[in-house]
Amino acid sequence: MSIQTQPGTIYFVEERDLLGFPTPNYVKIGLVKENEKGRSSDDRKDEHQTGNPRPLVVVDSIETEANVSTLETMIHQSLAMYRHRGEWFVKPNGKLKPFLEKAKNLNNIVFNKVEKSLQIDAFSKQEDNGIEIDATKEILEIHASLINTNLQLKKLDEEKKIIELTLRKFTGSIAKNIHGICNYKYKKGSSRFDNKKFEIDHPILFQKFGKDSINPNFTIKKQPILKKSSIRIDLENNIKIQKYKSCFENIDNNEETKDLHHKWLSVHVKKQPLEIQRDELILDMKLRCGENYGIKDVCSWSRKKIKKVSKSDLKEFDNDFLDNYIHKSQDGFSFAVNPFRPYKFS
Image (tube, rainbow, N blue to C red; front, side, top):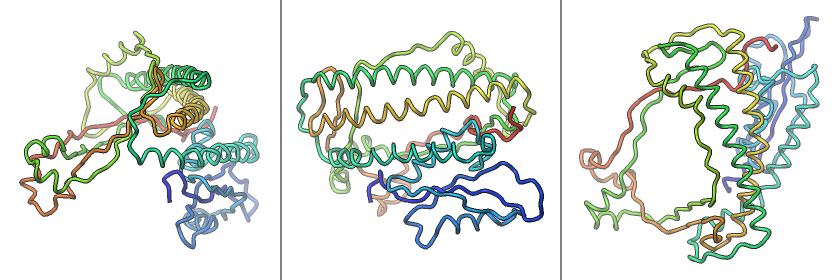
């Protein structure tokens, strides 16, 4: 099965009350993958029932032949302003219909990309022919739209980054979590096998154990360059002198941090239609590249056959020998803003 297609079901679950108490205005939006044999939306609902005194009911569902995980992520992002915690959302004016309409529209968008994505998958698995073709008027129009879309996304990314840095600065000289809004997480360092060094040191072993693969690299030419604003630079300099403790203290949110969080969520939602448009334009550009290396002054799509070797390919060698070629990054901390609001909506 292609990476672009992973059929499944998006389900919408609500609470019911049998004792006459008011029912919270929440709906849970989750997924069931087609390859999860024997499981249904009702099965997922039953799993969530444990610990909830009110019966949970599947009130609607959407079948997709595209990628159900991608669709769920897109739905969650588009409804971020209503997201309360995890997969639970607050219905606007108690109505589920706006959520269903948004989800169905996004399903159509994801599904319509499948055929193009499958064609591109086929091209990406073969070497390019080394030819750079001339741009047609249509290609130049696609390129101009893509440049404009990327510029808008860069501006929103800058806005989002400034909000994140402002939240980090808010806690003062010591980095702290802000309850319900943002937090730091321990991030374990990663490791990678140094192919180049191994090839230089052991060319015979590299040829013996290396595996051929295609390394696709798509690049848009004449990309917009957006310089960091002075506000961002000042905030980054301020964050550099902030100290970190092994255990992060939690502080309460307030109206100022809630307002910043609201703005961050708003930008998060604004990005989605632009991201959809960008991805669609890139698909169109790759299809016009086809087997070719690129389009003059527009883009390049290099797909060269390379030989790679991984640690798993060399399992017959001892770890002391292999450790000479493992690069490890240091452990650290990552900062994240909550993509939901676990506090009262204003």
